[in-house]
Each structure stands twice: as C-alpha cells, then as structure tokens.
Length: 293
Image (cartoon, rainbow, N blue to C red; front, side, top):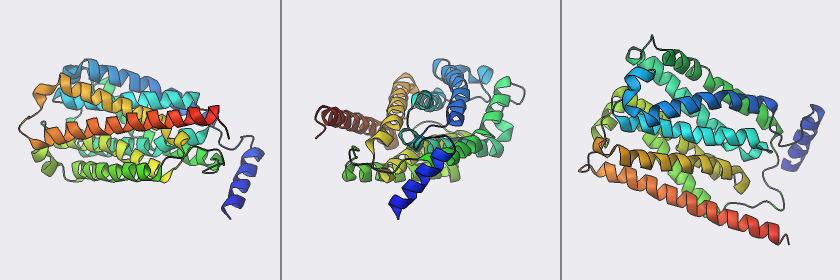
C-alpha cells in the first residue's frame, strides 16, 4: 500500500510539471524574501545588543536575550540559504515546521505583550508584518511542497542509527517541555532562569526553544541522513553563537544558580553531539560513494 501511494504521488508530481522530491519555486521565493530580514535583525541584535531600545521593535534586556534571539536568526540564515541551494525537498523539509512554531509563538507573544513594543519604530512594523504572516506562509509552503516528497527510503539511502534518533527525539521532547514552560508559565520560569527575564522575554525564549525541540522530533521521525544534514548545520551554528554570546554576556548570568551550568552544559553537550554525529555520518556517506557495493 505504501509503495502504491509513493507511485501515485510521483505520477501526480509529474502531471503538474514537478519531479518527485522537487523544491518548488514558491519555496525558494519564500526563502529569498525571509533571508534579508534575518540578516538585518541578527546584525542589530548580535553586534549591538545593548542598543535595542533605539534600533529594534522593543527594548530587549539584558543583552544575553538579544544575542540569543540573534543566534536563532543566524541559524535561520544558514537554513534558508540552503533552501535556495537545495536540489531535493526532503533535504530541507524538517526545518519548516520548527520555523512555523517559532514564528507563530513570537506572533502570539507580540499580541500578549502589545504594550511593551515601540509602536512608532519602523522595526515594529517589520516585526508585526513578519510574525503575523510568516507562520502561515511557511506552513502553507510546507503543505504545498510536501505533496512532492520522495519515498522515505531508497535502497542506497544512508540512514541515521535508531539509537541516535531516539536520543535526538528525547532531547527534542525535553526542549519542548522547556519551551512550553517558558511560554505558558513565564513567572515560574523567571524565578529559576540563570539571567533576568520578563514575561515577554520568557515567552520569546520559549519560541526559541521550540525550534530545536521540533527539530529533534522531526529528525526522530525521519530516518534519512540527507533529511537531517542541513537542519543540523543550522542548529549547530545557532548553538555555537549562543555559547559565544554567553561568554560575551557573562555578567548577565548568576554563577551560583545551578540552572546556569545546566543551560551552558546542555548546550555544549548538544553541540558536541551534533558535531560528532555530523562527522560520523559524512564519513559514512563518503565511504558509501567510494565503495557503492
């Protein structure tokens, strides 16, 4: 039955002029539109994190929160640049639902904390335009392009080890719980967090944690290495930039708070896991190309 479904999908794709696993032009156009906004926001927040009251849609304090949001944008830049270059839909599809969740939660946070924003600043109009439309656009593109997805596996496809997928899935569930805690119960999380938060910044962090959380779940459900490769590049780069931001904003942290070390240690461990997984799978991929048998 699954094989028949795959054949039907392939035939449908051919009828409308797109090969199976094609990246639709609409998908690339969306990436092209999003990238400039990510670049500008990442630069403003990461290079000048203490000037957000003058340069951004709302004053983000302290600087660690601003730079962490910038790091999420940097991961988005890596991902959407790869969307422009991708030759197959399945190689990028895992990233679209996490972006939908991230943007959707930021849109909700904006409504809940409307009075905290600088309504006269151009960045505010850009912020609201993006987060009131992007969740629907990204989700719509995902729905449209998934119709041309390829079969989950082929005979020569390099697959992720099941144990590693379970680990990444477990990390994803844990991260989603942190995301939900920050978004639904900000006051409780504020009291435990390693740097100062407000209800708005707690919910913004909740949106940021939703990204890696849904990425982990997406990879756990998708066995192909080729489907995890690009999104792991984006996530690894984002985590690296968060750790660099932590070093820059060390004064924002409370070293006596155990959550400080849990936060930093967890990010460092996840980065090491991603690098080790990436290096191992790329080595296996090269070996498979060198010895096809």
